[in-house]
Length: 248
Image 1 (cartoon, helix red, strand yellow):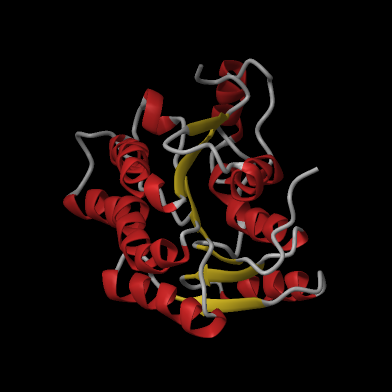
Image 2 (tube, one colour):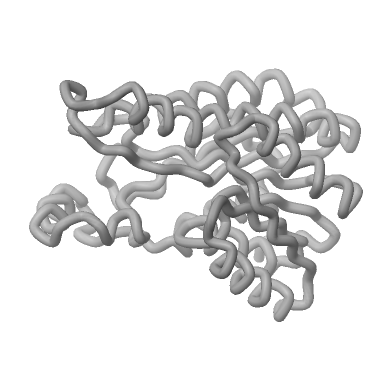
Protein backbone atom coordinates (compact mmCIF):
# COMPACT_ATOMS: atom_id res chain seq x y z
CA UNK A 1 0.00 0.00 0.00
CA UNK A 2 1.23 3.46 -0.88
CA UNK A 3 1.31 6.13 1.76
CA UNK A 4 -1.51 8.63 1.51
CA UNK A 5 -0.89 12.13 0.15
CA UNK A 6 -3.63 13.88 2.14
CA UNK A 7 -2.81 17.55 2.68
CA UNK A 8 -0.12 17.58 -0.01
CA UNK A 9 -0.24 20.11 -2.84
CA UNK A 10 0.92 19.10 -6.30
CA UNK A 11 1.48 20.67 -9.72
CA UNK A 12 1.44 18.64 -12.92
CA UNK A 13 2.60 20.58 -15.96
CA UNK A 14 0.92 19.49 -19.16
CA UNK A 15 -1.67 17.81 -16.97
CA UNK A 16 -4.72 17.98 -19.19
CA UNK A 17 -4.06 14.96 -21.43
CA UNK A 18 -2.10 11.75 -21.83
CA UNK A 19 0.53 10.94 -19.24
CA UNK A 20 -0.04 14.22 -17.39
CA UNK A 21 -3.74 13.51 -16.97
CA UNK A 22 -3.01 10.02 -15.62
CA UNK A 23 -0.47 11.44 -13.15
CA UNK A 24 -2.87 14.11 -11.91
CA UNK A 25 -5.60 11.53 -11.29
CA UNK A 26 -3.27 9.07 -9.52
CA UNK A 27 -2.03 11.80 -7.19
CA UNK A 28 -5.60 12.81 -6.44
CA UNK A 29 -6.63 9.23 -5.71
CA UNK A 30 -4.14 9.28 -2.82
CA UNK A 31 -5.61 12.54 -1.54
CA UNK A 32 -3.33 15.21 -2.98
CA UNK A 33 -4.65 18.57 -4.12
CA UNK A 34 -3.63 18.90 -7.76
CA UNK A 35 -3.03 21.95 -9.93
CA UNK A 36 -3.45 21.00 -13.58
CA UNK A 37 -1.36 23.16 -15.86
CA UNK A 38 -2.27 23.44 -19.51
CA UNK A 39 -1.21 25.63 -22.41
CA UNK A 40 -4.28 25.57 -24.65
CA UNK A 41 -6.50 22.55 -23.83
CA UNK A 42 -8.73 24.32 -21.30
CA UNK A 43 -11.71 22.01 -21.76
CA UNK A 44 -9.59 18.92 -21.25
CA UNK A 45 -8.07 20.46 -18.11
CA UNK A 46 -11.50 21.25 -16.68
CA UNK A 47 -12.60 17.65 -17.27
CA UNK A 48 -9.59 16.39 -15.32
CA UNK A 49 -10.34 18.88 -12.54
CA UNK A 50 -13.93 17.64 -12.33
CA UNK A 51 -12.69 14.04 -12.06
CA UNK A 52 -10.33 15.06 -9.27
CA UNK A 53 -13.04 16.91 -7.35
CA UNK A 54 -15.22 13.80 -7.63
CA UNK A 55 -12.47 12.07 -5.63
CA UNK A 56 -13.17 14.51 -2.79
CA UNK A 57 -10.00 16.56 -3.12
CA UNK A 58 -9.27 20.01 -4.52
CA UNK A 59 -8.13 20.90 -8.03
CA UNK A 60 -6.98 24.02 -9.87
CA UNK A 61 -6.80 24.59 -13.62
CA UNK A 62 -4.00 27.02 -14.46
CA UNK A 63 -3.12 28.17 -17.96
CA UNK A 64 0.57 28.82 -18.55
CA UNK A 65 3.07 28.29 -21.32
CA UNK A 66 5.87 26.83 -19.22
CA UNK A 67 8.39 27.40 -22.00
CA UNK A 68 8.22 31.07 -21.00
CA UNK A 69 9.96 31.80 -17.72
CA UNK A 70 7.54 34.43 -16.41
CA UNK A 71 4.51 32.21 -17.01
CA UNK A 72 6.18 29.12 -15.55
CA UNK A 73 7.19 30.92 -12.38
CA UNK A 74 3.80 32.59 -12.08
CA UNK A 75 2.19 29.15 -12.24
CA UNK A 76 4.15 28.00 -9.21
CA UNK A 77 3.42 31.23 -7.34
CA UNK A 78 -0.32 30.92 -7.96
CA UNK A 79 -0.40 27.45 -6.42
CA UNK A 80 1.59 28.50 -3.37
CA UNK A 81 -0.60 31.59 -2.92
CA UNK A 82 -3.76 29.46 -3.18
CA UNK A 83 -2.78 26.49 -1.01
CA UNK A 84 0.03 27.94 1.10
CA UNK A 85 2.45 25.16 0.21
CA UNK A 86 3.85 23.06 -2.62
CA UNK A 87 4.91 19.49 -1.95
CA UNK A 88 5.01 17.74 -5.32
CA UNK A 89 6.14 19.17 -8.64
CA UNK A 90 5.77 16.96 -11.72
CA UNK A 91 7.42 18.40 -14.83
CA UNK A 92 5.55 16.58 -17.55
CA UNK A 93 4.96 19.19 -20.28
CA UNK A 94 6.64 18.23 -23.52
CA UNK A 95 6.43 18.52 -27.29
CA UNK A 96 8.10 17.00 -30.34
CA UNK A 97 9.19 18.59 -33.59
CA UNK A 98 10.68 15.56 -35.30
CA UNK A 99 13.02 16.03 -38.27
CA UNK A 100 16.40 14.75 -39.26
CA UNK A 101 19.25 16.97 -38.18
CA UNK A 102 19.82 18.06 -41.78
CA UNK A 103 16.24 19.41 -41.96
CA UNK A 104 15.92 20.72 -38.41
CA UNK A 105 15.39 24.48 -38.11
CA UNK A 106 16.47 26.80 -35.33
CA UNK A 107 12.79 27.21 -34.44
CA UNK A 108 12.31 23.42 -34.18
CA UNK A 109 15.32 23.23 -31.86
CA UNK A 110 14.43 26.19 -29.66
CA UNK A 111 10.76 25.32 -29.26
CA UNK A 112 11.51 21.80 -28.04
CA UNK A 113 14.38 22.83 -25.74
CA UNK A 114 12.34 25.68 -24.25
CA UNK A 115 9.24 23.57 -23.63
CA UNK A 116 10.86 20.33 -22.51
CA UNK A 117 14.04 21.40 -20.72
CA UNK A 118 14.04 25.10 -19.87
CA UNK A 119 10.59 24.77 -18.32
CA UNK A 120 12.03 22.31 -15.77
CA UNK A 121 14.56 24.89 -14.63
CA UNK A 122 11.92 27.63 -14.46
CA UNK A 123 9.47 25.65 -12.33
CA UNK A 124 12.05 24.06 -10.06
CA UNK A 125 13.78 27.38 -9.38
CA UNK A 126 10.38 28.86 -8.45
CA UNK A 127 9.34 25.94 -6.25
CA UNK A 128 12.67 25.50 -4.50
CA UNK A 129 12.42 28.27 -1.85
CA UNK A 130 9.08 26.98 -0.56
CA UNK A 131 10.20 23.36 -0.53
CA UNK A 132 13.43 24.23 1.25
CA UNK A 133 11.53 26.24 3.87
CA UNK A 134 9.09 23.35 4.37
CA UNK A 135 11.99 20.89 4.55
CA UNK A 136 9.97 18.72 2.20
CA UNK A 137 9.57 18.39 -1.54
CA UNK A 138 9.20 15.76 -4.23
CA UNK A 139 10.28 16.86 -7.71
CA UNK A 140 9.64 14.35 -10.47
CA UNK A 141 10.74 15.14 -14.02
CA UNK A 142 9.38 13.21 -16.99
CA UNK A 143 12.25 12.37 -19.31
CA UNK A 144 12.26 9.64 -21.97
CA UNK A 145 14.28 6.62 -23.04
CA UNK A 146 15.13 8.76 -26.09
CA UNK A 147 17.19 10.92 -23.73
CA UNK A 148 19.21 7.81 -22.87
CA UNK A 149 19.44 5.97 -26.18
CA UNK A 150 18.82 8.64 -28.81
CA UNK A 151 16.41 8.18 -31.70
CA UNK A 152 16.56 8.87 -35.42
CA UNK A 153 14.95 12.21 -36.28
CA UNK A 154 14.80 13.40 -32.67
CA UNK A 155 18.06 15.20 -31.94
CA UNK A 156 16.18 18.12 -30.38
CA UNK A 157 13.88 15.90 -28.32
CA UNK A 158 16.73 13.62 -27.29
CA UNK A 159 18.85 16.58 -26.17
CA UNK A 160 15.98 18.00 -24.13
CA UNK A 161 15.21 14.71 -22.40
CA UNK A 162 18.86 13.87 -21.78
CA UNK A 163 19.27 17.33 -20.31
CA UNK A 164 16.42 16.61 -17.90
CA UNK A 165 18.26 13.54 -16.59
CA UNK A 166 21.48 15.51 -16.06
CA UNK A 167 19.58 18.38 -14.40
CA UNK A 168 17.84 15.89 -12.12
CA UNK A 169 21.11 14.39 -10.88
CA UNK A 170 22.71 17.74 -10.06
CA UNK A 171 19.60 19.24 -8.46
CA UNK A 172 19.19 16.11 -6.34
CA UNK A 173 22.68 16.53 -4.92
CA UNK A 174 22.03 20.16 -3.99
CA UNK A 175 18.56 19.70 -2.47
CA UNK A 176 18.96 16.40 -0.59
CA UNK A 177 20.01 18.15 2.63
CA UNK A 178 16.62 19.89 2.72
CA UNK A 179 14.59 16.66 2.37
CA UNK A 180 13.76 17.57 -1.23
CA UNK A 181 14.17 14.65 -3.59
CA UNK A 182 14.58 15.03 -7.35
CA UNK A 183 14.04 12.08 -9.65
CA UNK A 184 13.26 11.36 -13.29
CA UNK A 185 10.92 8.91 -14.96
CA UNK A 186 12.00 7.75 -18.41
CA UNK A 187 9.01 6.30 -20.27
CA UNK A 188 9.28 4.25 -23.41
CA UNK A 189 6.72 4.42 -26.21
CA UNK A 190 3.42 5.16 -24.48
CA UNK A 191 -0.15 5.22 -25.77
CA UNK A 192 -0.79 8.96 -26.07
CA UNK A 193 -1.98 11.37 -28.76
CA UNK A 194 1.67 11.88 -29.68
CA UNK A 195 2.10 8.18 -30.50
CA UNK A 196 -1.29 8.00 -32.21
CA UNK A 197 -0.01 10.39 -34.88
CA UNK A 198 2.67 7.87 -35.92
CA UNK A 199 1.65 5.86 -39.02
CA UNK A 200 0.55 2.28 -38.37
CA UNK A 201 3.47 0.73 -40.25
CA UNK A 202 5.94 2.74 -38.16
CA UNK A 203 4.11 1.76 -34.98
CA UNK A 204 4.55 -1.90 -35.93
CA UNK A 205 8.27 -1.41 -36.47
CA UNK A 206 8.47 0.20 -33.04
CA UNK A 207 6.59 -2.70 -31.43
CA UNK A 208 9.04 -5.13 -32.97
CA UNK A 209 11.83 -3.43 -30.99
CA UNK A 210 10.04 -3.63 -27.62
CA UNK A 211 10.74 -6.90 -25.77
CA UNK A 212 7.31 -6.82 -24.11
CA UNK A 213 5.69 -6.37 -27.55
CA UNK A 214 3.27 -3.65 -26.47
CA UNK A 215 3.17 0.07 -25.82
CA UNK A 216 3.04 1.46 -22.32
CA UNK A 217 -0.11 2.87 -20.77
CA UNK A 218 -0.20 6.38 -19.25
CA UNK A 219 -1.39 4.84 -15.99
CA UNK A 220 1.78 2.75 -15.78
CA UNK A 221 3.91 5.88 -15.95
CA UNK A 222 1.65 7.57 -13.41
CA UNK A 223 2.05 4.77 -10.88
CA UNK A 224 5.83 5.19 -10.97
CA UNK A 225 5.44 8.92 -10.37
CA UNK A 226 3.08 8.38 -7.45
CA UNK A 227 5.41 5.82 -5.92
CA UNK A 228 8.18 8.43 -5.83
CA UNK A 229 5.82 11.05 -4.44
CA UNK A 230 4.34 8.86 -1.72
CA UNK A 231 7.07 6.36 -0.83
CA UNK A 232 10.32 7.56 -2.39
CA UNK A 233 11.68 9.14 0.77
CA UNK A 234 15.16 7.62 0.32
CA UNK A 235 15.31 7.79 -3.46
CA UNK A 236 16.89 10.79 -5.13
CA UNK A 237 18.91 11.56 -8.24
CA UNK A 238 17.57 8.45 -9.96
CA UNK A 239 15.93 7.65 -13.27
CA UNK A 240 13.24 5.00 -13.28
CA UNK A 241 12.76 3.37 -16.67
CA UNK A 242 9.17 2.39 -17.52
CA UNK A 243 9.72 1.25 -21.08
CA UNK A 244 8.84 -2.41 -21.66
CA UNK A 245 12.53 -3.21 -22.09
CA UNK A 246 13.13 -1.06 -25.16
CA UNK A 247 16.23 0.36 -23.45
CA UNK A 248 18.09 -1.54 -20.73
